Length: 531
Image 1 (cartoon, one colour):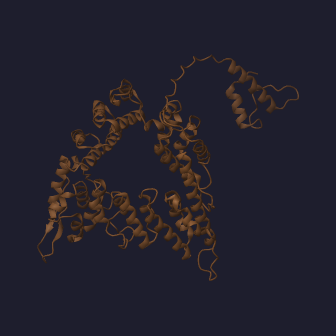
Image 2: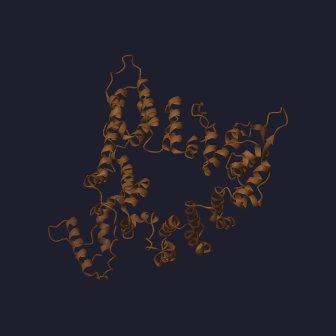
Image 3: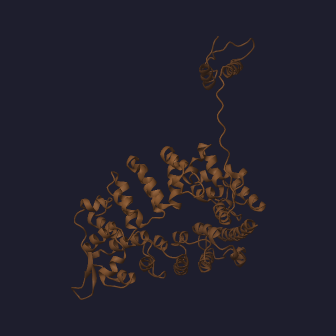
C-alpha cells in the first residue's frame, strides 16, 4: 500500500481508532506500530530526496568594541540579574523580604554605562532577549551591548528592535550622512534602520539629518514622514523652522499637527508669532466694572483654514465645546512671555494670580499648564504649581497636572517640592510625583518618604496600599540610608485592641527588611562596578 505523508499525518492526528492508517501491518503488529513504522520509512525517503542547497556567505566579522570589560564581580552580577529576569519577586501577592532582582536590572545597566563598560560577548544574547521582553530596558541595554548588538540583530529577526536604537557607525573624520554606507541604508534600508540612522545623524549633525530627510521627503509614506519628523525633536533649533513650515502644508493631518507642535516649542518662530496674535485677540485684561483688573476671554467663533494649517484641530473631543477647544489650543501654542506684556505684569506668578471672568479660569490655566510643559518654562510651571502645602484639588476637578509641571523644574527644586507635599499630605497622592524625581532621591525627599511610610505603619494602615511607593523606595532611595533604616525592620507586637489590618505588622516588617536589603545590595553593586 502506497501512503502519502499527508495521509500518515492525518491518521496520526485523528488516531488509529478513528482513521484506518494507510499501512499494511505485519502479522501480529497493531495499527499504531504500523503507522509509526511507515512514518519512519517516509521520513528517511523525504530526507534522502532533498537536494543540497547552496552554502550561504559567512557574515562579516563582528565589529570591535574598544570599551573596557566589566570587573569579574560585576560580570557575575549581570549573569545573576539576567538569569533572574523572570523571577518571582515582582508578582502579585506577598513578596517576602528578599530583594527583587528584576527591578534592579535597569539600575545596574545605567550604572554600568556610566562607567563606560561593554557587555561580555557571551552575555549579549541574554541581554538582547531581556531587552526584547522589556522595552524600558532597551536604551541602556543597547548602550551596554554596543555595536555588536546591531551586528547580532541583523542575524536574528527576534532582535530587530535593536536596529531602531542605533545606526551604522560613521568613518572617522566624516559626518554620518556623508558615508557611502549611510547613504545606502537611507535609500535602500529597512524602515527601522532608516529611523535609527536618522536619529544617529541628528545627534552628531542636526543640519545633516535635516538635509538627509529632505532628499526623500516628498516620496515617503505619511506614516513614515510622521516618524521621521518626530526624530527632529532632538536638537531642535530655529534652523529647522523653514523645513517645519513646509511640513505645515503636508497632506497628512498628523504630520501637520506634529510640525506645528515642534514649531510652537520655538518661541521665536513665525508660527508662535501667529498663534500669539490670535491668542491676544481672545484674551486680554479688563479694568472696567468694580475696578479690579481681571482677565477677559472671548473664545474664537470659528476655526479658519489658517488656524488649521497651523495645527489647530477643528473637531473637539466628545463632550467638549468647540470654542473652548480652539481657545485651549491657541493659548497652548502661544509663547508664555506674551502674557506678562499683555496683562502689564512683571512675572508669571502675577499673571496666574489674576482673576479670570465668566468661568474661563480652568480652560485658560489648563492651556497655560500645557504650554509651560511644552516650552519647559520653570517660572510658569512654578507659578501654576503653587506651594506644595496647598490642599490638593479633588480628583477629576483640577486643571493642573503637578507631575508634568514638576518635570519642567530643576531636579533639586522638584525633590524639595515633592518632599514638602508628602510631609503635608502623606503618600496617597504622591506616587506619580515621585516617579518624576531624579534618582537617587535627594536626602530630604528620601527622609519624607520613609517618615510617611513609618507613620502609615504606626497608624495601622493597610500596608498593601503602599506597595507601589515601597517599590519605588527600593529603587530610588540613596543606598547610604540603609543603616539609618535598620531600626524599622524590627517586628513590633500586634495591636491588642484589634485595630489595623490582619497580618499588617508582619507585612510591614517584611517590607522594611526588603527595603534595607535592597539598599545594601545596590551599594554592593556600586562597589562591584567600581572595581
